[in-house]
Length: 190
Image (cartoon, rainbow, N blue to C red; front, side):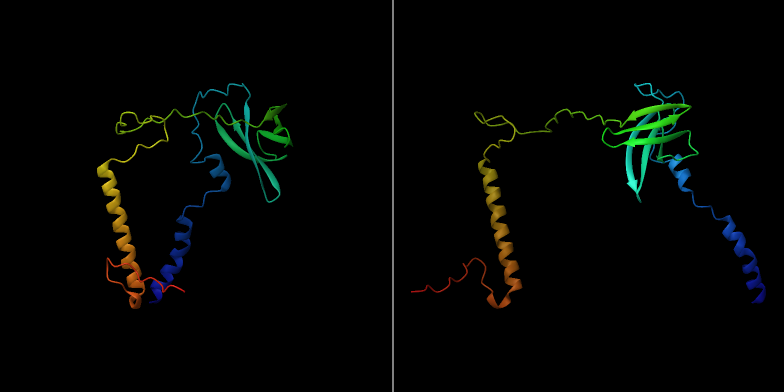
């Protein structure tokens, strides 16, 4: 028994060292599995600016800014006056939604990137039944149901009433009514 314990005690530190280290937050931010892959020869933004200001948020009283390098399409979240970056955000104007960024020895004034919103093309109807002659063809108007459809709807409504009655009957067995009979009416007050 003692040799097994000694062997386990010697191997435990090796097993812990063999486990992969948890990825650091910075490596996840730099190599996000959700970001755009770095594409060699990627085209810069139409504005020609080397950086784009894409968003901002506040966490723990500290404001962060999302900046995208348009050449590599790599995005990073940086805080105000954060050093050790290829660019430093020096100021933020929330009214104008602009930031001043020092990048490669010059100051860039960047406005928050506007989202591009476009209208979707109208959806094509899959297989709509032909409207009866004389029926309005405008969207939102429903043609009256046919006779067979009306019968089917009546059957569904009757089945719903029957099942509700059965459910009430099982919930209140002392007040059970035979199926198909109307509930008793309360006595009339003179």
